Amino acid sequence: MPLLRSTGAVMRLILQLIVALSLLSVMAFQDVPTERRVMRKHANGKEHVVLYFDKETGYLMKEEVFYSDGKINWSGNYKRNIEHGLWQFYHANGKLKTTETYSNGKENGITTHYSESGKKLKEEHWRSGKLIKEVQF
Image 1 (cartoon, rainbow, N blue to C red):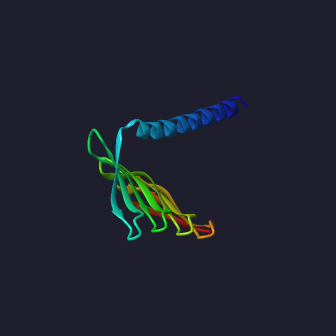
Image 2 (cartoon, one colour):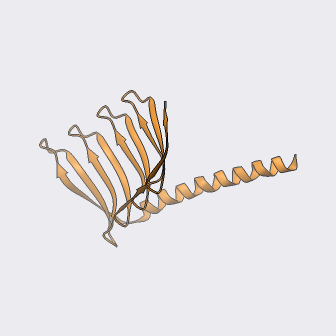
Image 3 (cartoon, one colour):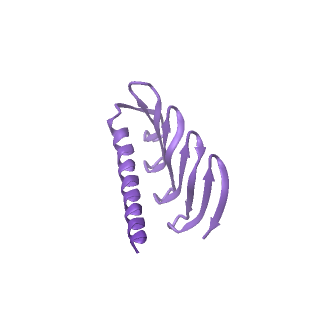
């Protein structure tokens, strides 16, 4: 039984470390002085494409693209001008369409697709830009 207790403690510690590292990565983005640039507007004057740059290095850090009604179409993160981290795509009704994660410009992790009503449709498992497995729901 001591092994089970120690395994549970190790799993809790690993989970705590993952949460802490996730928070640090979010905080790191917030600490970087960024410049927000509206690159394109829709015919109605609303923002279409907005990019965020690191003021110190000039690197692209984030991209946001909006529908003409102002709702978010997609957003994604960059590291040194290369797709890196979470990307989220949305249906025109505002509901989440797809989440995917990039590592150094390649899909890595689980990409999840949702219907317009929010139902999970499919998961794709990626490793270094290669599709490993698909799961339909």
